[in-house]
Length: 217
Image (cartoon, rainbow, N blue to C red; front, side):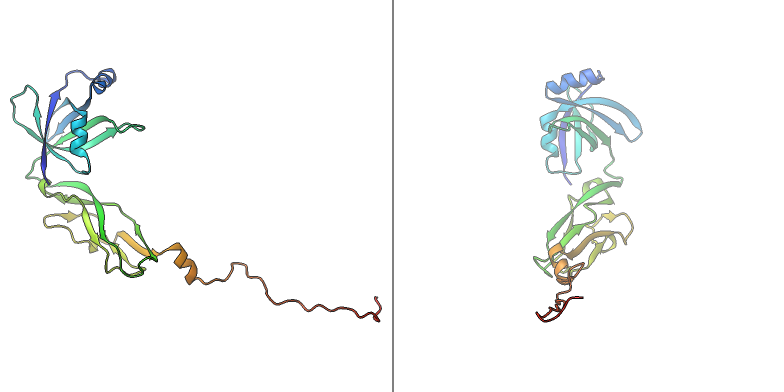
């Protein structure tokens, strides 16, 4: 995983009013914390932050500080708050990390190939969309890729069956379901037959008609 460079400014003022003010100027408030050191507030260019994060789930950064000759700090974007109705950023948490210590993160699951068996008839169900992994920060994979080519209808893939990239450990119970390949609704209905839930008797009752010469009781 690559480390991006990002310049931030120390932020002395805090509070909702100041946060609203800098957002109007194209900045987003944030905080830097972790590794047993004192936390402090920062502000960063919103567009630059969005550009770096685009298409990435786990982001590593080297933070440098405007007007500060101090050494860079290596961080991971730990949390991002976004506006509900707009795409703008509200707040960013930067967590200090050591590149020499393993970390635990969530990584998305990416299906690289669909099953050949029952093509067009089956349905791939994601029980999990992401998995928890442990590894060194620079070895965090962009995704956990699954090739489902050999998966048969009715079969499942569990955590224990997933082959992790070198240096990466997948956490969780090995028996937990990740993917289930089932019949589509239409196919399932066909296999159950065309019988109705409440079948009607197609045989017609015998109708007895009276002749003209018969008398009614």
